[in-house]
Length: 219
Figure 1 (cartoon, rainbow, N blue to C red):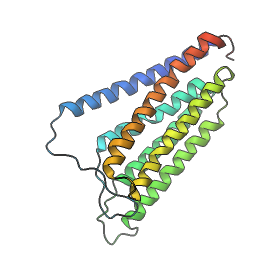
Figure 2: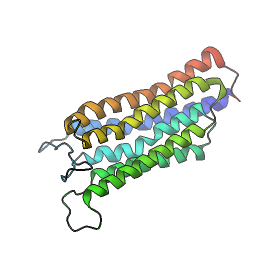
Figure 3: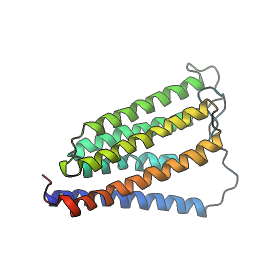
């Protein structure tokens, strides 16, 4: 009933507060700390034998926070239990971990069992497989009838946005875009859209639907 929805809404609000707090603390820290030198942009790819250097703390932070965006959707729009929703968090976390591993491969390695560029390709493939696992699991959750249309729309948009991340990396690997364009233009825009979508989908959408047209239809 409505009590169940409000309970799930409180859970999502707590997750949003968690994401906002930790990300806020991190970005304030980044603004306040002194940068002794400029951080070079990443330049490793499937083909080029150079080392990719990125801000490790940023990637570790979102390895913990990004999976919660899928849990929020599952808890509000579907009939998924906490255990089922946690499976989304795990597969998404592994997506982030394998992506982090790919960016940390030392491309200057010599005499290794697996060449550095093949290590990058393996981690990239594993990350994509985990992402597909998240998609399949999210698609299988039965939607709440009262907001199924809205929930399915947000889910499809999430598929598109999240799929753009590996696509952008592939474009840079084939040198269609530069590392600067990848990081500053593409990833920054995707991060903004993905996080804004999660905020809107996790609060305004279901609240509006519930109070305007579907009160009493939850079961």
